Amino acid sequence: MKKLVLTTAFALATICASAQEPNIGMMPGMPKIECDFTPYQAAPASFDKETSGIERGTIEEMEYSSKTVGTIRKVTIYLPPKYDKNKKYPVLYLLHGIGGDHKEWLNGGVPNIIMDNLYAQKQAEPMIIVMPNGRALKDDSATGNVYAKANGFEIFERDLIDDLIPFIQSKFNTYTDKEHRAVAGLSMGGGQSLNFGLGNMDLFAYVGGFSSAPNTRQPEQLIPDVEKTKKENKLLWMVCGDQDGLMFNSSRLKAFCDKNGVPCTLIQYPGEGHNFVVWKYGLYNFAQKVFK
Ligand code: FER
Image 1 (cartoon, rainbow, N blue to C red):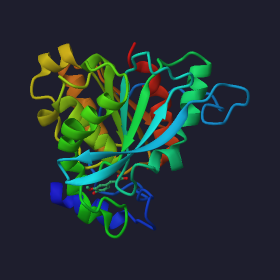
Image 2 (spheres, rainbow, N blue to C red):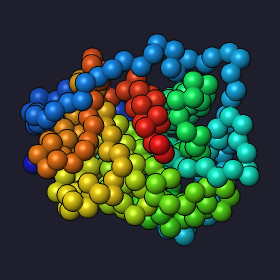
Image 3 (cartoon, rainbow, N blue to C red):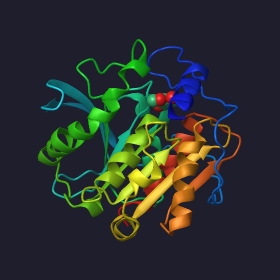
Image 4 (cartoon, rainbow, N blue to C red):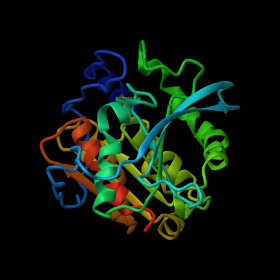
Protein backbone atom coordinates (compact mmCIF):
# COMPACT_ATOMS: atom_id res chain seq x y z
CA MET A 1 0.00 0.00 0.00
CA LYS A 2 2.72 2.46 1.04
CA LYS A 3 4.65 1.67 -2.08
CA LEU A 4 1.55 2.15 -4.24
CA VAL A 5 0.85 5.51 -2.64
CA LEU A 6 4.42 6.68 -3.13
CA THR A 7 4.65 5.50 -6.72
CA THR A 8 1.29 6.97 -7.67
CA ALA A 9 2.15 10.25 -6.03
CA PHE A 10 5.48 10.27 -7.80
CA ALA A 11 3.91 9.48 -11.16
CA LEU A 12 1.33 12.24 -10.81
CA ALA A 13 3.66 14.78 -9.32
CA THR A 14 5.51 16.82 -11.87
CA ILE A 15 8.49 18.87 -10.95
CA CYS A 16 9.13 21.48 -13.56
CA ALA A 17 12.23 23.24 -12.33
CA SER A 18 14.29 23.57 -9.21
CA ALA A 19 12.90 25.38 -6.17
CA GLN A 20 9.31 24.54 -6.99
CA GLU A 21 6.90 22.14 -5.34
CA PRO A 22 5.31 19.36 -7.40
CA ASN A 23 1.87 20.01 -8.78
CA ILE A 24 -0.12 17.35 -6.96
CA GLY A 25 -3.75 17.14 -7.94
CA MET A 26 -6.44 14.78 -6.75
CA MET A 27 -5.36 11.18 -7.17
CA PRO A 28 -7.88 8.48 -7.95
CA GLY A 29 -7.34 5.54 -5.66
CA MET A 30 -5.95 7.61 -2.79
CA PRO A 31 -7.60 6.69 0.49
CA LYS A 32 -10.30 9.12 1.58
CA ILE A 33 -10.18 9.17 5.36
CA GLU A 34 -13.16 10.52 7.25
CA CYS A 35 -12.39 12.91 10.08
CA ASP A 36 -13.82 15.99 11.80
CA PHE A 37 -12.46 18.94 9.87
CA THR A 38 -12.10 22.18 11.76
CA PRO A 39 -14.25 24.91 10.15
CA TYR A 40 -12.36 27.08 7.65
CA GLN A 41 -12.25 30.78 8.31
CA ALA A 42 -10.84 32.98 5.56
CA ALA A 43 -7.86 35.18 6.36
CA PRO A 44 -8.30 38.93 5.71
CA ALA A 45 -7.68 39.71 2.02
CA SER A 46 -4.59 41.78 2.81
CA PHE A 47 -2.84 39.34 5.18
CA ASP A 48 -0.06 38.63 2.66
CA LYS A 49 0.12 42.09 1.04
CA GLU A 50 2.76 44.62 1.94
CA THR A 51 1.31 47.37 4.15
CA SER A 52 2.89 50.82 3.92
CA GLY A 53 3.90 52.71 7.01
CA ILE A 54 4.30 49.75 9.37
CA GLU A 55 7.44 48.54 11.13
CA ARG A 56 9.32 45.78 9.36
CA GLY A 57 11.34 42.84 10.51
CA THR A 58 14.67 41.95 8.95
CA ILE A 59 15.88 38.98 6.94
CA GLU A 60 19.38 37.59 6.95
CA GLU A 61 21.14 34.52 5.66
CA MET A 62 23.54 32.79 8.03
CA GLU A 63 25.81 29.76 7.88
CA TYR A 64 26.31 27.07 10.51
CA SER A 65 28.61 24.14 10.76
CA SER A 66 26.81 20.79 10.72
CA LYS A 67 28.45 17.80 12.39
CA THR A 68 25.58 15.69 11.06
CA VAL A 69 26.22 16.48 7.41
CA GLY A 70 29.88 17.46 7.62
CA THR A 71 29.34 20.72 5.73
CA ILE A 72 28.63 24.40 6.29
CA ARG A 73 24.90 24.88 5.80
CA LYS A 74 22.80 27.93 4.95
CA VAL A 75 19.77 29.14 6.90
CA THR A 76 17.40 32.08 6.45
CA ILE A 77 16.40 34.05 9.53
CA TYR A 78 13.57 36.54 9.98
CA LEU A 79 13.82 38.79 13.03
CA PRO A 80 10.71 40.66 14.19
CA PRO A 81 10.30 44.45 13.96
CA LYS A 82 12.16 46.31 16.73
CA TYR A 83 14.29 43.24 17.41
CA ASP A 84 16.22 43.88 20.62
CA LYS A 85 19.21 41.68 21.36
CA ASN A 86 18.73 42.29 25.06
CA LYS A 87 15.29 40.66 24.98
CA LYS A 88 14.66 36.92 24.88
CA TYR A 89 12.67 35.47 21.99
CA PRO A 90 10.91 32.20 21.23
CA VAL A 91 11.81 30.44 17.97
CA LEU A 92 9.72 29.00 15.16
CA TYR A 93 11.54 26.56 12.86
CA LEU A 94 9.77 26.83 9.49
CA LEU A 95 10.47 24.05 6.99
CA HIS A 96 10.19 23.86 3.19
CA GLY A 97 9.06 21.19 0.70
CA ILE A 98 10.72 18.68 -1.58
CA GLY A 99 11.30 21.20 -4.38
CA GLY A 100 12.74 23.91 -2.16
CA ASP A 101 15.57 24.97 0.10
CA HIS A 102 16.26 27.58 2.79
CA LYS A 103 14.94 30.30 0.45
CA GLU A 104 11.66 28.66 -0.55
CA TRP A 105 9.46 30.26 2.10
CA LEU A 106 10.93 33.66 1.39
CA ASN A 107 10.51 33.34 -2.37
CA GLY A 108 7.02 31.83 -2.37
CA GLY A 109 5.45 32.54 0.99
CA VAL A 110 6.36 36.12 1.96
CA PRO A 111 6.69 35.15 5.64
CA ASN A 112 8.20 38.57 6.41
CA ILE A 113 5.12 40.38 5.04
CA ILE A 114 2.69 38.03 6.81
CA MET A 115 4.53 38.49 10.10
CA ASP A 116 5.03 42.27 9.73
CA ASN A 117 1.25 42.58 9.22
CA LEU A 118 0.48 40.36 12.23
CA TYR A 119 2.81 42.38 14.44
CA ALA A 120 1.29 45.67 13.24
CA GLN A 121 -2.07 44.29 14.44
CA LYS A 122 -0.53 42.87 17.65
CA GLN A 123 -1.76 39.42 16.66
CA ALA A 124 1.44 37.42 17.23
CA GLU A 125 4.11 37.14 19.89
CA PRO A 126 7.48 38.48 18.72
CA MET A 127 9.51 35.47 17.60
CA ILE A 128 12.55 34.55 15.56
CA ILE A 129 11.70 32.52 12.47
CA VAL A 130 14.39 30.12 11.31
CA MET A 131 14.09 28.72 7.78
CA PRO A 132 16.74 26.05 7.26
CA ASN A 133 17.56 23.75 4.37
CA GLY A 134 15.73 20.58 5.44
CA ARG A 135 17.58 18.33 3.02
CA ALA A 136 20.48 17.26 5.23
CA LEU A 137 22.89 16.02 2.55
CA LYS A 138 26.25 17.20 1.25
CA ASP A 139 24.43 18.20 -1.94
CA ASP A 140 21.40 19.88 -0.42
CA SER A 141 20.35 21.74 -3.56
CA ALA A 142 16.81 21.36 -4.93
CA THR A 143 18.11 20.30 -8.33
CA GLY A 144 17.91 17.11 -10.36
CA ASN A 145 15.55 14.39 -9.18
CA VAL A 146 14.57 15.79 -5.80
CA TYR A 147 12.71 12.57 -4.87
CA ALA A 148 16.01 10.69 -5.04
CA LYS A 149 17.35 12.99 -2.31
CA ALA A 150 14.32 12.58 -0.03
CA ASN A 151 16.33 10.67 2.60
CA GLY A 152 18.01 13.99 3.44
CA PHE A 153 14.68 15.11 4.92
CA GLU A 154 14.88 12.29 7.45
CA ILE A 155 18.53 12.89 8.34
CA PHE A 156 17.59 16.52 9.02
CA GLU A 157 16.13 15.52 12.40
CA ARG A 158 19.69 15.17 13.74
CA ASP A 159 20.99 18.29 11.97
CA LEU A 160 18.11 20.30 13.45
CA ILE A 161 18.48 19.02 16.99
CA ASP A 162 22.24 18.56 17.28
CA ASP A 163 23.54 21.36 15.06
CA LEU A 164 21.01 24.05 14.12
CA ILE A 165 19.15 24.58 17.41
CA PRO A 166 22.43 24.92 19.38
CA PHE A 167 23.73 27.32 16.72
CA ILE A 168 20.62 29.51 16.87
CA GLN A 169 20.74 29.51 20.67
CA SER A 170 24.40 30.57 20.58
CA LYS A 171 23.83 33.44 18.12
CA PHE A 172 20.54 34.86 19.42
CA ASN A 173 19.04 35.60 22.78
CA THR A 174 16.39 32.89 22.75
CA TYR A 175 14.36 30.99 25.29
CA THR A 176 15.52 27.40 25.32
CA ASP A 177 12.55 25.54 26.78
CA LYS A 178 10.00 23.59 24.72
CA GLU A 179 7.22 26.08 25.45
CA HIS A 180 9.20 28.63 23.47
CA ARG A 181 10.03 26.44 20.48
CA ALA A 182 7.74 25.56 17.58
CA VAL A 183 8.16 23.62 14.35
CA ALA A 184 5.97 23.87 11.26
CA GLY A 185 6.40 23.31 7.57
CA LEU A 186 4.92 22.71 4.17
CA SER A 187 4.60 19.32 2.49
CA MET A 188 7.87 17.40 3.17
CA GLY A 189 8.47 20.06 5.82
CA GLY A 190 5.00 19.38 7.21
CA GLY A 191 5.83 15.68 7.49
CA GLN A 192 9.15 16.57 9.13
CA SER A 193 7.38 18.88 11.60
CA LEU A 194 4.87 16.23 12.63
CA ASN A 195 7.59 13.54 12.85
CA PHE A 196 10.19 15.60 14.70
CA GLY A 197 7.80 17.76 16.71
CA LEU A 198 5.67 14.92 18.09
CA GLY A 199 8.74 12.67 18.29
CA ASN A 200 10.62 15.19 20.46
CA MET A 201 7.99 16.66 22.73
CA ASP A 202 10.73 17.59 25.20
CA LEU A 203 11.92 20.10 22.57
CA PHE A 204 8.78 21.31 20.76
CA ALA A 205 5.43 22.16 22.34
CA TYR A 206 3.86 23.53 19.13
CA VAL A 207 3.66 21.56 15.89
CA GLY A 208 2.23 22.56 12.50
CA GLY A 209 1.81 20.52 9.31
CA PHE A 210 0.71 22.25 6.11
CA SER A 211 -0.23 19.82 3.28
CA SER A 212 2.01 17.22 4.86
CA ALA A 213 3.68 14.75 2.48
CA PRO A 214 3.97 10.93 2.52
CA ASN A 215 7.06 11.21 4.74
CA THR A 216 4.53 11.74 7.58
CA ARG A 217 4.75 8.77 9.93
CA GLN A 218 1.68 6.68 10.75
CA PRO A 219 -0.47 8.09 13.59
CA GLU A 220 0.45 5.21 15.92
CA GLN A 221 4.12 6.08 15.44
CA LEU A 222 3.55 9.81 15.83
CA ILE A 223 1.45 9.37 18.96
CA PRO A 224 2.51 6.12 20.65
CA ASP A 225 1.41 7.45 24.05
CA VAL A 226 -1.89 9.34 23.86
CA GLU A 227 -1.84 10.56 27.47
CA LYS A 228 1.72 11.87 27.20
CA THR A 229 0.88 13.75 24.00
CA LYS A 230 -2.24 15.25 25.57
CA LYS A 231 -0.10 16.48 28.46
CA GLU A 232 3.00 17.66 26.63
CA ASN A 233 1.88 18.98 23.25
CA LYS A 234 0.33 22.46 23.40
CA LEU A 235 -0.67 22.77 19.74
CA LEU A 236 -1.12 20.28 16.91
CA TRP A 237 -2.34 22.30 13.96
CA MET A 238 -2.78 21.25 10.31
CA VAL A 239 -4.19 22.57 7.06
CA CYS A 240 -4.48 20.97 3.61
CA GLY A 241 -6.20 21.98 0.37
CA ASP A 242 -9.34 19.98 -0.43
CA GLN A 243 -7.93 19.51 -3.96
CA ASP A 244 -4.58 18.20 -2.69
CA GLY A 245 -3.88 14.51 -3.37
CA LEU A 246 -1.80 14.36 -0.19
CA MET A 247 -4.75 15.08 2.14
CA PHE A 248 -4.69 11.51 3.47
CA ASN A 249 -1.50 12.19 5.44
CA SER A 250 -3.30 14.86 7.44
CA SER A 251 -6.78 13.28 7.64
CA ARG A 252 -5.28 9.98 8.86
CA LEU A 253 -3.68 11.75 11.82
CA LYS A 254 -6.77 13.85 12.51
CA ALA A 255 -9.00 10.74 12.52
CA PHE A 256 -6.63 9.11 15.05
CA CYS A 257 -6.69 12.23 17.24
CA ASP A 258 -10.50 12.43 17.04
CA LYS A 259 -10.77 8.79 18.09
CA ASN A 260 -8.33 9.14 20.97
CA GLY A 261 -9.36 12.56 22.26
CA VAL A 262 -6.10 14.30 21.33
CA PRO A 263 -6.70 18.01 20.65
CA CYS A 264 -5.86 18.58 16.99
CA THR A 265 -6.88 21.00 14.25
CA LEU A 266 -7.18 20.11 10.57
CA ILE A 267 -8.60 22.76 8.28
CA GLN A 268 -9.60 21.75 4.76
CA TYR A 269 -8.77 24.76 2.62
CA PRO A 270 -11.60 25.07 0.09
CA GLY A 271 -10.82 24.87 -3.63
CA GLU A 272 -7.03 24.73 -3.29
CA GLY A 273 -4.42 22.14 -4.13
CA HIS A 274 -0.77 21.77 -3.17
CA ASN A 275 0.33 25.39 -3.17
CA PHE A 276 1.38 28.53 -1.34
CA VAL A 277 -2.19 29.84 -0.97
CA VAL A 278 -2.63 27.08 1.63
CA TRP A 279 0.87 27.39 3.12
CA LYS A 280 0.68 31.17 3.61
CA TYR A 281 -2.70 30.68 5.31
CA GLY A 282 -1.02 28.03 7.45
CA LEU A 283 1.73 30.37 8.61
CA TYR A 284 -0.74 33.22 9.18
CA ASN A 285 -2.84 31.05 11.52
CA PHE A 286 -0.12 29.01 13.18
CA ALA A 287 1.97 32.09 14.04
CA GLN A 288 -0.97 33.60 15.93
CA LYS A 289 -1.41 30.50 18.10
CA VAL A 290 2.11 29.82 19.31
CA PHE A 291 3.92 31.08 22.41
CA LYS A 292 0.73 32.29 24.09
C1 FER B 1 5.51 11.90 -2.63
C2 FER B 1 4.75 12.94 -3.13
C3 FER B 1 5.04 14.26 -2.76
C4 FER B 1 6.58 12.18 -1.76
C5 FER B 1 6.86 13.49 -1.41
C6 FER B 1 6.10 14.53 -1.91
C7 FER B 1 8.35 11.31 -0.47
C8 FER B 1 6.46 15.88 -1.51
C9 FER B 1 5.90 16.99 -1.99
C10 FER B 1 6.35 18.34 -1.56
O1 FER B 1 7.21 18.47 -0.68
O2 FER B 1 5.81 19.31 -2.08
O3 FER B 1 5.25 10.64 -2.95
O4 FER B 1 7.29 11.11 -1.30
